[in-house]
Length: 108
Length: 126
Image (cartoon, rainbow over all chains, first blue to last red):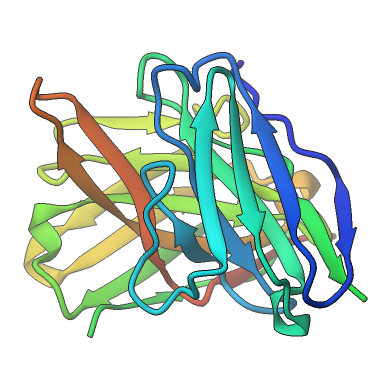
């Protein structure tokens, strides 16, 4: 079955920039999406179609995709950005939806 | 605004059954694919099923295929998940999510989950 691979954890100091990666064999042909999940809450979409921000998502969240890797960049991280982040995409057929394992972002 | 509310979770014994519901409002329900996604305690997100807008096709993750059945009633703006032969490893918060989408210039479909409901907890334990 298809897999998306993320690092388990990333840490950053407030105001600094951090990147969370997501790798998958189908990513050259499929868009990547990113979700933020804070403790005890439902996930929220922060990036769609590789690099688009939904209304209300701060400009410090930036998405990109190159080859088999998608990247979520948080520029000038804030304490409120501390959360779990999940990438999402589909396998090459488009029928199976897949999440990455999630990355815990610590801001300290 | 768009709103999704899950219900039907609870405690069930291994081998038992449960039916989850998701009530949708604030959008034309019949225009969208819908999904169920779950999250075991302390674990990541796991997509488990989707159904097309007209119910003509559904797909399942290997972990639930043959045990779970997704369905919808567009007249009632409702999504369902029938869960049978439940196992301890099915213990999770179950979310319903609308599949937002677009078609590119070649007619390829692209979908993603937005928004999500608040989730309902299913506990499988004796």
